[in-house]
Image 1 (tube, helix red, strand yellow):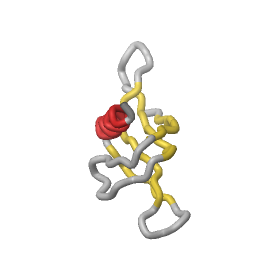
Image 2 (cartoon, helix red, strand yellow):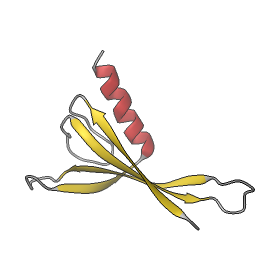
Image 3 (cartoon, helix red, strand yellow):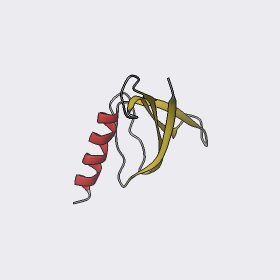
Length: 87
């Protein structure tokens, strides 16, 4: 089985929360990593998401970051709330 990681930068304009992270995160740009693996047995190449992670400032450790596992739907929900707060 082949795996790949995709990286993207997601920007939040307002402080935000993501389910599974028990603190308010500051506005800013965040790196999101999505790990995917191939779906075997198909006549074409297809990928399935197996993990989504976000790099956030470490709690209580100035200048450090941590990589936390999150749900892709939870990330989309946080982005939707952030976008609607701007209007």
